[in-house]
Image 1: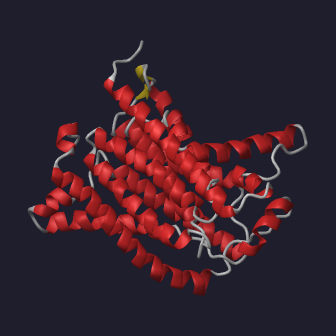
Image 2 (image 1 turned 180 degrees about the vertical axis):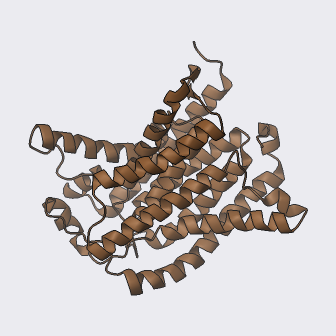
Image 3 (image 1 turned 90 degrees about the vertical axis):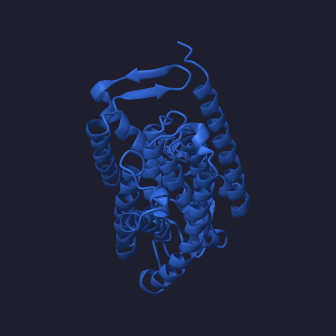
Length: 355
């Protein structure tokens, strides 16, 4: 159910949002504590760092060889436990639990499905990387991305009957069946971009935190309280993840984390009609994936590199910037982008279309 902005500011809704986020933070700390026991006993040494065609990357990250991956699993596991736990309590008990429950078909069911499904697919990729010392190739990974996105496209088009897109400051446009490939493109692009951001200690966690912060504020302003609370749980879990992931990191987020969060961010942006603002809100992931695409095209066409190493954060490493400095500056850049994207959304939502 979508409520008015005035109802969103009800003190109970605000308290519920912060209580769920705080619960997610502490639960993530507990889940991560036990999950790290598994990582360090069964899945160490983690993914291979050495790559035959990236000498600069190898030199910069040789010291990280042996760091476990799959550290992002507690993020989506924590959120799943909380939302399903609240739903279960609401079905067993009456009263307050009905108001706390935030699992709804129109707002959170699809993002939750993406969070779990993409997390499981990413975990499988991580395990392949651990067992075979190298994860899935780019082509196979993109195929997985398209397959997962196609499920969401079917749900949006046939179940939610969504066939329109909203262009900021210009209004709503009906695109019919073209919404299906449009949806798949947005989801794959978002997942791929966020996947390229997981490369330095604390980088992905901090960047994703600013992205979901902006999307939470947007959902809250639209009166999508269940969706806002769902993302507040993700934010709380991300802070818990950062507790262990800031330099020197105890583990990498891994594909199980970045795929889950990437697909979820794309789904939330599409649900809130802000997917065209996502390149601003997620400016760092856009820079990361853009550098990879430009580098790949240049190597294929011109037979030489443009950047010393990609994604772009590795270029700054090659220039001599300390890892922590890159991480903090990228956090700041994305925070600025998230605020600008939020401001553009608020202006657009209060003004009539220009056309």
